[in-house]
Amino acid sequence: MRTDRLARSLVATAATAFLLTALPASADEALDALKAQGFARIAIANEPPFTAVNPDGSVSGAGPDVARAVFKRLGVDDVVASISEYGAMIPGLQARRFDAVTAGLFMKPERCAAVAYSQPILCDAEAFLLKAGNPLKLKSYKDIADNPQARIGAPGGGTEERLALEAGVPRERVIVVPDAQSGLTMVQQGRIDVYSLPVLSINALYKQSGDTALEVVAPVEGAPVYCDGAAFRRDQTALRDAFDTELAALKASGEFAAIIEPYGFSADAAINANRDALCAQK
Image (tube, rainbow, N blue to C red; front, side, top):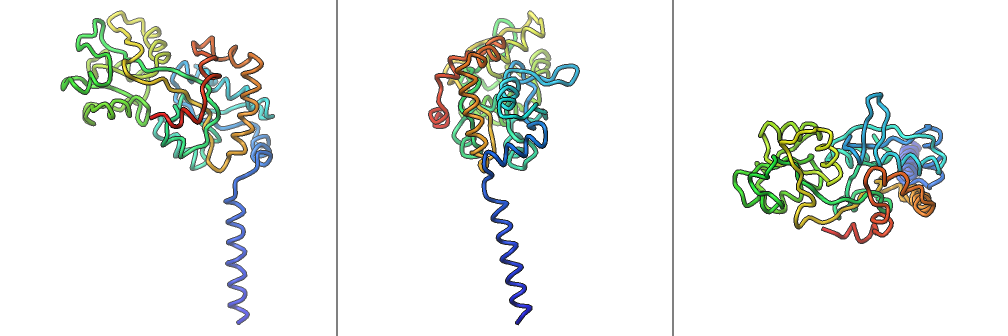
């Protein structure tokens, strides 16, 4: 009998411990953990101007720079980045490999259901990189779907991949591209006919290439404007709310504009956008 009571007691204790660890941490608890850690771990895609890893290994780009400024206001000294494919960012966040995602991960309903987004940070439209003269006359994702010869490259799990598939491009003609340099090379070599990324990313890639045999179509006809935000785990809405408070102060002070506008982003677009509306946008 005593053994049964002891077993029940151990089970109850274990269940209580599980419930306590499963409860959402308060903003103070989450912040204390990050302060003790000394940095916030962020996921990025190394896609300038959203995110970038410099030759010396340091992290820049509009997303990490805003995250660094906000976390500093919260008392967290720095950010440490890990490069990830878009499709792996949310699973990595949920598995606690990152503390946040600050990578041009545009808001859409299924992502908003999986993570706790901050208010908008970076907004952009979609663009195509293709051969000069646009030989296949591709100006929209539907144009690619309607041309049985056209192949599009896009980041795996990214918005561009989804837009292509939703426009009716067959899966076998949507080529997953691991990074921007690979996308550029694949267009140059004729392995894909168009590479799709946000306008600012495509323009930065095109400018860096110096290849006059290429051109940019921007913005893509019929594609919506999207905004990202810093993404946190669903059990860390208190930390997200604290981030939002300092993000709002950063926007109001003018520092936000000073950070992102040199990268080509519009501060007004992010300030005037709203998370709830963006999360409802298909």
